[in-house]
Image (cartoon, rainbow, N blue to C red; front, side, top):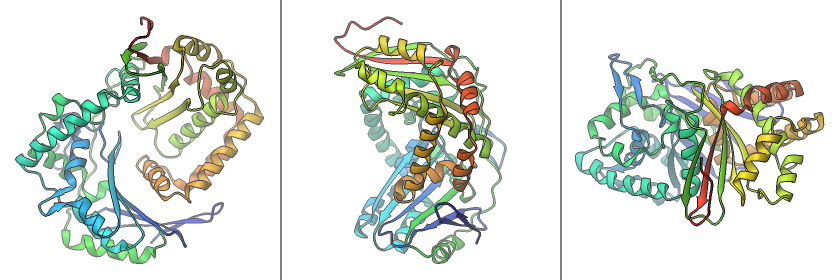
Length: 431
């Protein structure tokens, strides 16, 4: 079993790949009361067109099917899996993102039993005409709920403005129309393709013995007789560098207007260390420009244009990347004007870079005291071929020149789109 240790934080990851292709990772944390485990498939909302690894057939599936599949996995012939975890005193959950679908539990006892439940229900799908039709009604209600959530609409409209063709522009849950076309047959095809062990990661964090965990998982997997499967070609459309729309506006029941400014990053197809470096450089840049200790944040705050929840974030994957600056503001036009004018020319200083690096170091070290957050970050990095323990080394090598260069290529007017949600009774502004 390969053992990897970070010499700075003195934390360890034990990894083992089973014959089925399943990767098992264990992060032992002596004295940690709660054990946290995730079982993640490299299958997300953007995977709506792909080539079947066994036949080579191209399959195009309804939008929202990864999220639909996540919902359906908890229903088994014997009842609801949530009840099985609850009887052991554990809590369970799941979520679907652009790149992955994750199933998880958190517990203070009965770790072995919980692992058995997690592995078995995720690897035993149960879809029927009746339960699929029932689920359509449940997810339709969820989709309609999201349509009434201002923050969700702000982000969704921005993605549609930034991207012309890439499926990241679509809502993760799909649409009412798309989920109505889902059938048990399509669910099984997607499940059999993407839920193969070679396309998944089991991660366990807690006061556990890694060898014992791996032995338990190996014993669980042995009788399931998974056959080898090759890579899954994911067929993404060619995304033009230009944004789809410059500005999208909507009126909703909000007390204050919401503004989101996005910067599309046309440079993609990065994985591993190159993607990690780009993510860290861009994150440091936004901390220096719009972090709470930055002069621009202070100026905007004192002017009453933002509150302390205003954030700037960068999201990067192998086939898409973008920055989003978003929050409430009493005057979206004035805030947008200040951002457009000052972001390209705000001072970037060595002291600001060191402060931003200290914050990143602190967040990295703090990860290991928060198993839920650590699992989220580990999974996110793993499926982008990034080593968790490479973060500090790459961070230390970022220079001020790197930050300046990154701003010049990323913070550009032609790569920018804006989404605004106005109060229903506000005069607003035309696009």
